[in-house]
Length: 152
Image (tube, rainbow, N blue to C red; front, side):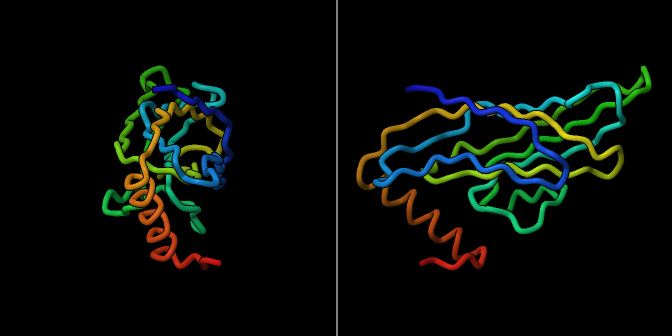
């Protein structure tokens, strides 16, 4: 299956939208890679949490809650200016198939400096049959309703 790649530089407390929806919902996606790296590694003391969601987030935070069914992936980036403080990443992502837009958030962790961070995402493109399309779309509608988003 084809792989689509997305990359960006996101500021602390910001949200980026990756537009994936189609008119008929017959194209699905699965995250195959999710990585982050600092804008200027080693220049600042950084602790940043970057997350991927199925719905837009009104509050951007550094809390990772795996019971949130709208969370697709989370990444923690830490680096520092001291020679003994090395860069570290922890990446977790879900193999769930989705067919709507996804949202990337960034938030300063418990310590460090609020600086922008780069992200890189690879999505596997999947052709959905009618039943898979329906299931993915209904899950997305339910997630929107659970988040209190008005459906028009």
